Image (cartoon, rainbow, N blue to C red; front, side):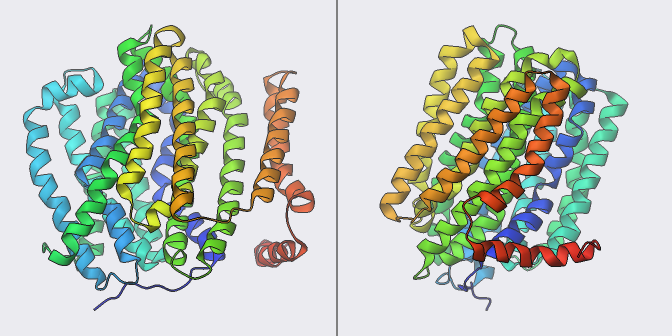
Length: 493
């Protein structure tokens, strides 16, 4: 029998898992972001809005149809008391397919009205491709979780990265040839089926369609309890697209502007998910140890430093890149990028801030906290969008993420008090704020100055924090020791 392990995971492994598992797990979104100028130029603001409504629908359908089994599998497979990990896999695999047997026929039968509801176009093939994509994404994500739990980094990268490149190549080819949102959706779905399912057949080959009664109830309770949270998190990020479509002055065009700004801020969410891939293994293993609180507190400082630097980079460079590389039709999206990136930063921090709820398996409490943020966001959007259009949607998203973050932190601290390194966190926040202010001051001279100045400040900031930031001499020595092999590899040491 394969037992779930309970060994200590060092901070260095958190960094390595975040970087390398994140590279493979988030490669699809990164490649999609790199092709953003091509996609936006071909589809235009209206077509880009339709495609983003489709991709948003894919995200929510994935959350619902997985029945929370990805999170349940990872949580139970990393807990020392769970027992046989293969039984955890069997249960997750069986529940996912049972759910698929229910939702997929319904989706296929009502394809035409669902398409009109979700993307604003009565084209049933949008839903057909959506069902195909959802199933392949659900199975691929379960395979990814299995490789991450087992720490099989090389196999994960050797499978996930080529698959991602192949999917994006098929999608880009269909987009360039047919030049429609439906073609892009079809390319993504076909690419996913042709590449992801063979990977699943290999990685999940030990899984069986078998229910283990001792695991079924706790896994379903944990997974189902997390679904309202997943839906609420999706509402925080994506519901504003539908509200803009319904209540915005320019409808689908407003969706396109908001979606472009959101694509930049989604890099922050992408980075947060990348960090989360390393954090959850680091946290779930260590939080049961006697010194687990101290380990997680130090990890949170590193998490905040990395996420904060990425958010700062996007907020500074996003508007300049939009102004330089993307059509003037999207100029109104430029001022939306910084505040939407801040909202995404709060969203990226939400998982670590709620670590106590993960520890105590309080998935329903997590869902209620996220739902509160979603209610605030939707309520604010309904008030602001008719007048402020896309800017109102941004303000609503920021308000909702702020409420969810504060509530999540407060409730989590009550059940598992984490000794945060408040002094270091405050010092890092001051460094980031000063860098942002300096870049804005330089930007008053023009877009070229903004781009050049922001790039220079971002390049210098890590070195300034290293020399003058909240680091001990011992930590600086560790950084130097860790950098020496990398420098030697490039012939600089």
